[in-house]
Image 1 (tube, rainbow, N blue to C red):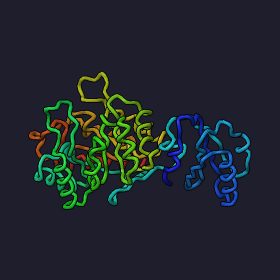
Image 2 (cartoon, rainbow, N blue to C red; image 1 turned 90 degrees about the vertical axis):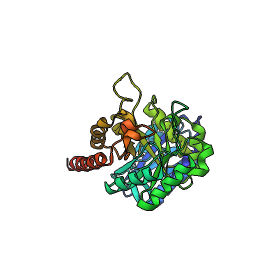
Image 3 (cartoon, rainbow, N blue to C red; image 1 turned 30 degrees about the vertical axis):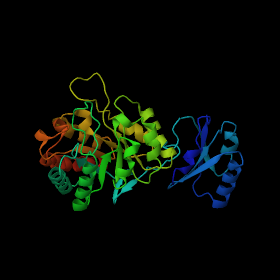
Image 4 (cartoon, one colour; image 1 turned 60 degrees about the vertical axis):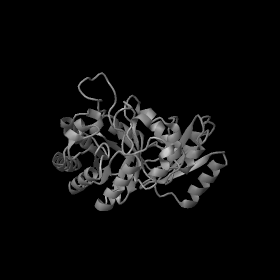
Length: 351
């Protein structure tokens, strides 16, 4: 189901409601209930699951008699919803969202490996990395064309040329490409990028989020360095409320008192986000730790705790990397890790 009804949400809507219908309800009775609810001034979002149909009552449902609706013979349960996020709420969408890009599926039991360098540096570099991660079973190629850097003097990417080189790598390997967009001004340059990444620093760039909501392509939304899960979901809500429901959440570590790693990887966010939302959740252990030797154990832990994918930095020569070489794996290291990740997922699946 699409998320177009989310555009009806308004700050004044203080309370919404979910009506779960019993299995096997006749279409005629279902339509009669929906028609009656619409006459109460509500917009109805219908989510057809494998066993139940969920009606999301969008608008101010505070005056609706929940006991009356619950007494109907076709109704299984009625719940009031007060969370500020609705489009990405598990309550409105019981089934996992599966995001598909270039034949690759993410979410709903489908696990995706995203790999590549922090930044695109040259044709030789990106092609070498693309070939190696493809051979190791990667599903998507990541690479930064525009890089947000703390210092204005650091390498900030090849910009348009970087995107061209990513497209060249895609043409050779067939891997869909993922790259970070930083501004609405850059949107025309990303028309032929398969997945648009919103970095941690841009998670609350609401103008950008609204514009990405108008696109028909997947958005990979990273959690900010000091943002709560609620804030992350509200950022996803901006994208989905504008009409684009193809959102992938990414846990990439948060800033804490730890002084031995760049950030602290909050793996508890993975099952918690799965409980709160139907959106896929992937993990980026490279940015979370900032240290390449810590990437494998954190990647394996992420795979074990239910992540829908991993985003891992791989560089053919980390010692000469222009950006974040300390956290990048060499191709042979990534290959060994990919095999272990598959083994962990198989073991968890068998439990």
